[in-house]
Structures are given as C-alpha cells and as structure tokens.
Amino acid sequence: MLELPFLRANRDEAEQRLTKRNIDAKGLLDRALELDEVRRNTQTELDGQLAELNGLSRTIGDLMKAGNKDEAEAAKGRTTALKTTSQELRERLEATEKALHDHLCTIPNAPNALVPVGRTPEENVTVMQEGEIPVLHANAKPHWELGEEYGFLHMDLGVKITGAGFPVYSGQGAKLQRALIAFFLDRATAAGYREIIPPHMVNAASAFATGQLPDKEGQMYHATVDDLYLIPTAEVPITNLYRDEIVDADKLPVKLVGYTPCFRREAGSYGAHVRGLNRVHQFDKVEIVRVEKPEDSYAALNEMVEHVKGLLRDLELPYRQLLLCGGDMGFASALTYDMEVYSAAQQRWLEVSSISNFETFQSNRLKLRYRGDDKKPRLAHTLNGSALALARIVAALLENNQTLEGIRIPKALQPYTGFAMITK
RNA sequence: GGAGAGGUGGCAGAGCGGUCGAAUGCGGCGGUCUUGAAAACCGCUUUACCCUCACGGGUAACGGGGGUUCGAAUCCCUCCCUCUCCGCCA
Image (cartoon, rainbow, N blue to C red):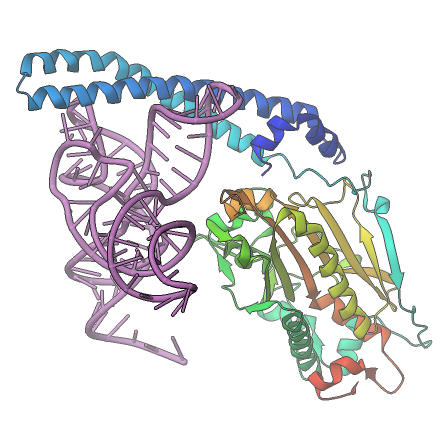
C-alpha cells in the first residue's frame, strides 16, 4: 500500500511512476486524494466535537463532586445534541477511512525510475547473460522423460495421491532436492543471513500484510475450517515476523533466509508449457528476506542479485538477468529482477528467481518501522528474492547435464548429494 | 475434546465508574557526583491521526467489536487469543 503522505506531497512523481504500469494513474490518485481530504475534514470536525464533549463531562464531574445536582443535570442536557452529531461524524469518518483504505489497496506500488516502460514480458530488459548454452547429444530428453527413465521423478504418483502438479521424488531425485536445499541454505547463512524455519500456514492478517490478500486470493490454498492459508512462498511468514514492529536502526539490516515448500493453485494454467516441473502446485524454495533503511535498499537489492548469480554459476547453469518492465512487475514491487536459467532439452528459459525491492509498500501494510537518528519511527524498506526455487533448477540441471552415461551433478553440489552422477 | 484462569505501556505488575495514557519496579536515555566506572540522586522515556510555517494544541488507543453512562482500563454482551489441569497423540 502506498503511503498517503507521500502521495499528498509528491502527487506528480507518483502519477508519473504509476503510469509505467499502464493503468489510469491520474484517476486512481485523484480518487485517493479526494477521499483523503474528506477524511481529514471530517476528523477535524469530529475532534472538535469530542473535545467539547470531554469538556462538558469534566464539568459535570466537578459539579457532582461539589454537590451541585441541578447544574449538573442542566449540563447533561447540553451533551445530547453533541452526542448525536459526533456519532454521525464518527460514522462518516469510519466509512471514509474504509473507502480510502480499500481504494489504496487497489493501487499497485509505484515503479522505480529505473523500471522500463512496457506491457508484456517481451519488453523486459535483459541486463546480462552468462554461461554457455550446452549442446546436447542427439537423444536428449526433457526432464520429465528423464525422471521416468531413471526412476527418480514420478508425476503420475503425485496425481494418484494428491492431484496434478504435485511431484513425487524418489531415490537420487529426492536426495538431489535435499542437497540443493542444504546447499542454498549454507550459502545464504555464509553470506550473513539468519536461518528461519517458519510455519507453512499463515493467517489472513499475514497474507494481507505481504500483499497476497486481497490481490491474489485465488492463488493460495485456503484451509477454510481454520481460516488459514498455505504459504505460496516463505516471504509471507518470514516478512511477517516483523509485522507491527519498531526496530532500532542499529538492528538493520535484517537478513533472513528460510527454506519452505511453496503451495500455489496456479488456477487456469495448464497445457504443454507447464509440463513436468515447469509449473507445479508444490515446490521447494529457499528465500532470502531483508529489512533495510531506505537509503540502503537498492544496494541491498544488488547484493541479493550477486548472491543469486553466485549460486547459478556454481551450479554451472547458463542464466540471464532480466529487469522487469512496468507491465510485468508484481503488484507490490517497486523494482524486480528475474533470473532465468536455460533448460537445454526444452530449449527455453525458466524463471528460477525473482528479486524485488518493495520499498515501503509492504512495510506500510506490515507497520514495520525503524527508529532513525531523529528517534522518529519511519517505515523500513523490505526486499526478498528466491535463492533459489528448486523445481525449475532441477529441471535445468537434469536436462543440461544429461550424458549417455547418466546425469552429471555439478561439482559444488557433489558434497551434498554424495554422488557425482545420477544413474539408472 | 472436557474443566478452569487470564489478556493493561519494552518487560514485570497495580488500578476495577470521574484530570488514568494509566501507580510502582525493572530496563532504556540524559544529567549531577567521580580521574574513570559502579552506587546514589534528579529528570525524561508509547503510538497513530487531525489543526498549525512554527511554538503549541486537539482526538483516539488498557486483546477485537458492540452496549450502558454526562463520563469506562474499570459495568454488561460478544468474538478472538494465551496459559494451567485432564483426555488423546508425533
């Protein structure tokens, strides 16, 4: 949620930035500021009435104490009208506040100045690309066929016990998952991130604070009996650790990492391009989360990107970094880099990481603040990024490293897998 | 699942209808004293919103919501949460 004081003070800048999202920025801002003005006027009026009422109550108390019953009763009579009008004003204020809040919830974050203009993923900017595109032998297969052939990935068993899009890993496939998770966690903790094991279900307040509700309600699995949501990413529980907190400036930056399974309904996305592990309802992911002072947040974002690049290099995967255009960015983000790896048998790029700076968009909902040098609470910046998301990394590893003898495991991973090759 | 207790400021813990945003203690910040430190003493120490260029002023908040009253942290209703005991159980 954008900050109202920012919108009031920097209307033009906000409009200019929001326009990159190809939305009616002017209309949205006009409405927000109009509601804000009604709200402020109403509150001023209401506060005045309440002050008067409080004064009368105090007077009545004094009169009662002095035993002056008649005058006290007379004063009581004068409160009636004030109570009626203040009640009306209160209702109007609450209605306006709710309308304003609901309206603000519909406005996405304002893109950073660096965000390119564009509507579709084709207009994202490739920042850099690294690593060699592997040349596969003539008989190379996509990962789902490899999984079947080697017997470590079973989409059909997932269908039996749960439903489509819930993969079952076994043997060396299962070990590979665990190895990747451990590898990613070790690298993150070595880089100064504190490991967290959070709950895998969250309440509605948490889902709202990080922006999943109300914007992406249909994307989450909802356990209705207990009104809890299965997390779509560790970002939700981990960032919410800091909901309603005021942290001292010397506690910043906060750097956290967590592994969790991620659950996504992915409603309506079926077809050939989502075969195998390309898009599943449950996958494993190691997520890094940071809380930063505003002046440090973009340096932190770059640091996160470098961290992810290091992982991809060590996994020997060809990858590229994209700067998302205004039309392709997530609702809550001010700037997002996507990292994609090349999956050689499918001959396509797969998104394996999304690294975003939310600036104060999340912290405003979270009420996550820090106390600066002036001792005043200010909203902090929040960031997060996948480091990394497993299913697609696995897909690319399997496809790119297939040989006639078996599937080669990158050197950096071998201490974790305990084997150098997946064999039949 | 059954029975009971409780939710107050960073923490502990009073208040149970009238200057209570809230005693007291601890913690934290500043000061006096000291070569320095400790101790002691003094003062300060929640947040959001509104008005104001500012000084300053106002409103709200004692788990959430509603009610009674001129007035509620205090009384009533309701929901949520936490803890203890019993049962079940990894």
